[in-house]
Length: 417
Image (cartoon, rainbow, N blue to C red; front, top):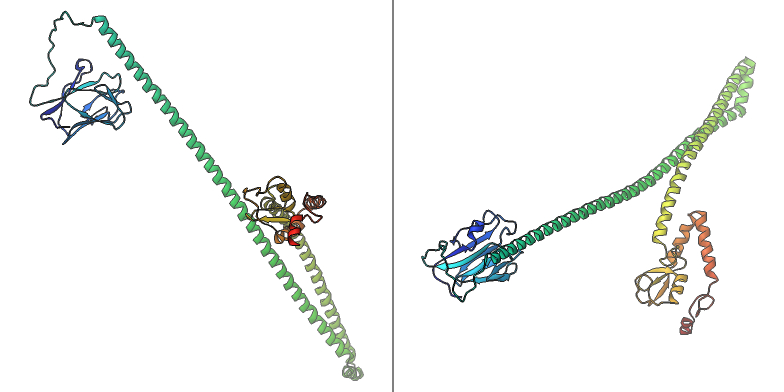
């Protein structure tokens, strides 16, 4: 396109109806829209904030549409961000059915003021529209404007509903997020309290054992010392030297007093021994009472720990087919584990893993897992132990087609032989 010399103007076609005047395009980027910064500002809801832009370069004048409603150039509707070249006397319309129309004019110093009205004489071969035709045209334009306004209102209402629904979804997401965070916090607190209770029980056990050992040691030391004193006194009484001394002192009248002193000393030792035995019995009673109270606390904590442990076992060591603890756990080539009985039942229908659907290449009996579950079941409730034993007995007598008494495949036996 060759650049035309002269100045560019926009001349409104219906200046009397909408109050627009002729406008010269002085800047390289000339904007038409509803915003106040536009070069031609049209305060109408049917016009976008930045409806279209007129620019020039070395190749000529261009118009770029920036509105969702579109811009018409000589009746051709432009899409969003679509460009169109402008030449002299091009008609620009801001949207389909819009009353805002401009005539793009390029002139070299000529007067571009609105043309004066002149009376046109009808000729014999021309048809002049009557007043009724003009009214029909105006009513049609009014209807089109109302339809556009209604469409804009419907679009605004739909947009408001979409925004409200989006806000509701966001609020629901925030509530769900808070609920999940609270649940995670409660689970973490429970785990932390359980660990604290276990550590507290262990520390109490250590303290009780340490105190019992200390009390036993002190009692043994006291008993040993009293017995040694008693033996010494008896030896002194029984010794021949002491008897000789007593016989000599009897002659002098002193023997009786020393015997009395020794007897008093012996009584005092016996009283001390009786007191230490009483202390020992009292300490044993106190230790027994404290042990009973602590055993109750230990029993409650043990029951809680066992219940939590049982729940953990049911979650982690359950067969995905029968939802019971593994009985003769069998690990597949895909590293998933199921009961041997459940696997044989499953293989009657399909030859793939019941969890990941991978083909079963190998099967291996997990002895470690079986022994671990058996040791755990010993510490569970009687009901769970009876239930597991009943399941094992029921599965022992069942035979699958193609297997011998031991439940092994005949095909495998043939391969081995």
